[in-house]
Image 1: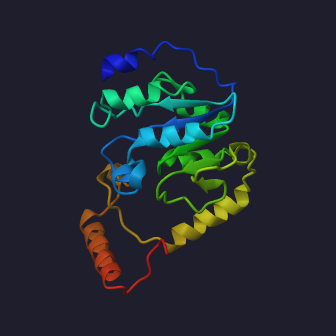
Image 2: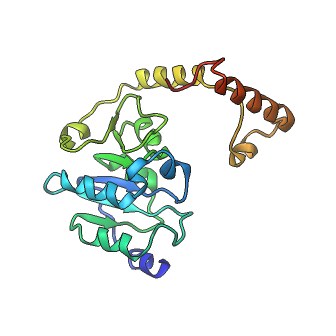
Amino acid sequence: YFEHLTNYENRPVDLSQKYIYVPLHNQPEMSTSALGGNYRDQALLIEDLARDLPEGWKILVKENPRQGAYARGPMFFHRLSRIPDVEFVPSNTNTHALSKNAQFVASVSGTVGWEAIRQGTPAMVFGAAWYGSFEGVVKYKAGLDFEEIANTKIDHEKLQSDAGALVSRSHDGVIEQLFFPLIPDLDHAKNTESVASTSLKLLRDEIDYTFQ
């Protein structure tokens, strides 16, 4: 797996060309296994993108820095190698530069879509992304006009309003241990009690879900 990736580490990256940026998800992960449906197979995502790709465009693929050989067997790379317009980019390529200069970004449900629309780049999602209803986001289906998506203008004030409305509907509590260090004064006992209480109320249909 890693020997394969090293083949791309010294390749130049042309950010001036027309391209779709596809940063791969780490797998296994909820963003693909639970939220991706058929597109937990990320090679399928890229294959479907390639079918509608305008002439002269490329698909730039960047591996997730946390990924290992799992879900990246020889057949994964073989399938992508058969698509002429797919290019792997070096792992140290700046993801924000790739996103900023792309016609749009494409992801199953990754944070890259949220980062993209915040800086004015449209996003295409293939799974149940939490930001999927926001300004500048389109859900993939066959036959979409990629040129039209690339020309989407994002109203940043509306995006802020939509994000604020989502936050206001969300419930208090931290459920991902990776985020604990971001809240230095987090009371773990109170957080556990809050998350458990909220989860029970959701199961009993006593409070509204964030996503309707």
